[in-house]
Image 1 (spheres, rainbow, N blue to C red):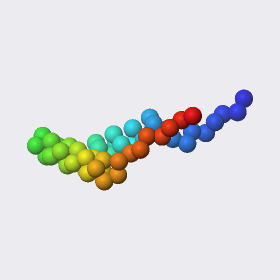
Image 2 (image 1 turned 180 degrees about the vertical axis):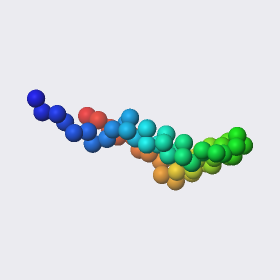
Image 3 (image 1 turned 45 degrees about the horizontal axis):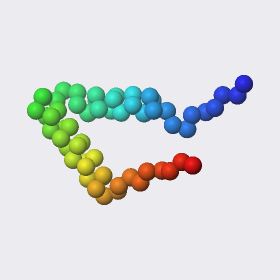
Image 4 (image 1 turned 60 degrees about the vertical axis):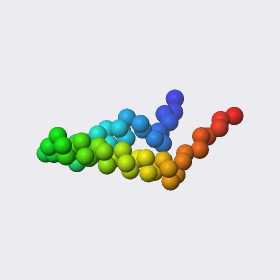
Length: 59
């Protein structure tokens, strides 16, 4: 039986992101960490306004 090579691994992406966030927030105070998340949310909101995602149709 052939095995398919994954083009995208969601779990791997999640783990890399968690490691990056851990490194970026290590040593921050509670207030600094809250500001980190506020900035991240602002970036995501900006991206959503600038580049709206169009849903893919499957037929």
